[in-house]
Image (cartoon, rainbow over all chains, first blue to last red; front, side, top):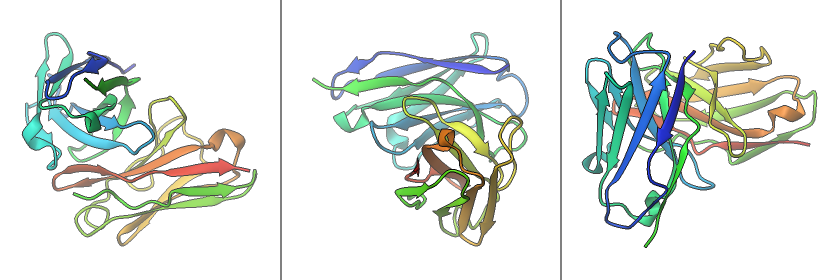
Length: 122
Length: 109
């Protein structure tokens, strides 16, 4: 059974850096094909894909946010960490981590965490 | 990469069939058969309903089906039920990663 859970601050100030942790179980990022991604959703708005990391440490980033994002993994702790720099109030959103189905590199997100709401405000 | 285009809202009566559209470009929906659909109830995480255009995950009702033609993917719900009322998002792989649609709010009348 695959589960994921996001953790991190609920309130951050503009210009600060946000660090979010996704702790998962039911699979390992040491296993070929596995990957974890981050998706966010501003209040009342649509989903937006941010970043993804594969088992082989290959990383993908949203082109529009690439300069501000870093994704890393700690396979010993079953965790994936996303950092977002230079925060702005428009970054206020619920941040989800999700497991990418392992069959092919390009396919869907089959399990999602519950999400964590991050508010950017001074 | 631009978001995929979905109608903002759709409504239907119980028992009806309803189809959502999701329009992309030659770089996403038109290029890959990696289109997926997610259902999201208020305050909840998205739930995968369809993957790779037309495949249903285990546990998802066979009332949900997906298809694609050219740059447009579609999700059809047959035998509409009150519990289907939710937001629905399409997603496609692109050469730059993944892109989501703006979402469609389904109202069951």
